[in-house]
Image 1 (cartoon, helix red, strand yellow):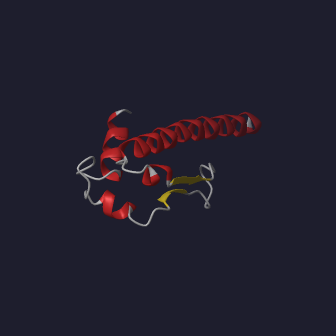
Image 2 (image 1 turned 90 degrees about the horizontal axis):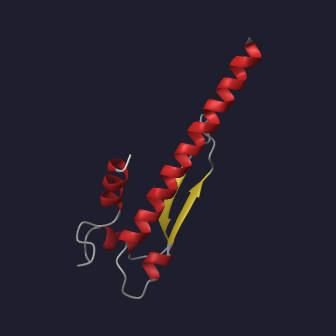
Length: 97
């Protein structure tokens, strides 16, 4: 019975990890899509770092943009994205679930 419990927990952790990875991917795609485009530099500047260790103390997910003016764009200083990118992406991705 203890082996069965371990296998069940392992399967559950794998399923949660897969679902979370899909959420992270959807979020990232939406974030890139909502990024305003002039030269395309800000859109190309997004980076996603994710270690996919659900239940571990070292779990993390990081979305960052290497373009210095990306924070200005996220504060709504673009007619293409007057509400920024991050918060609308968060709202959109939550609603899709």
